[in-house]
Image (cartoon, rainbow, N blue to C red; front, side, top):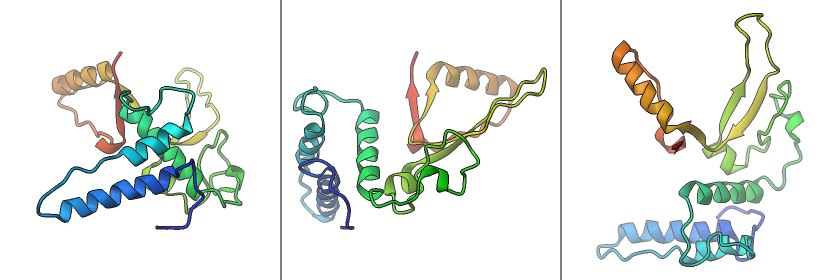
Amino acid sequence: MLDHHHVGDPCVVCSLYEVLTALSAASREIRKEPVTPSTLRIALSNLYPDSSFFQEAQMNDASEVLAVIFDCLHRSFAQSSSLSDTDSSESNYTGSWDCANRTCSAHSLFGMNIFDQLNCYSCGLESRHMKYTSFFHNINASALRNMKVKRDTNHASVHWLPAPRLHLINS
């Protein structure tokens, strides 16, 4: 395992590594045994001792779990960064939330850079360029249904985001 800053007690990153290693070993066995994620749940629950997050017999949304794991990965591997967000190559954008540390596995593997700008079709005025990193792209489920109906009637092609980075919310 790579050297990293330990986050939590026990460390969430070490617990995640332990669970993933056990899953990998179990997949190679002839007689497959279940792998318990208890060590990871305990590590996550210790981050929030005064709440019901990640407590035994409690349900948590998968996106909440992923968000906390990504945050722990970021805090663990980006700890030694001496670069600030304004030192990054994209510093001409305001509102930058990107991680300038190339060793940050959370941002380099799971983050997607979002470039945001609004343009007025009437007067041509442009807003400031906004750049940030997001681990999720929320899409309203009703908007997806409407897009499908529009696509079916127009026979237009629609380019979808990769499924692992798509988080749907229903309104």
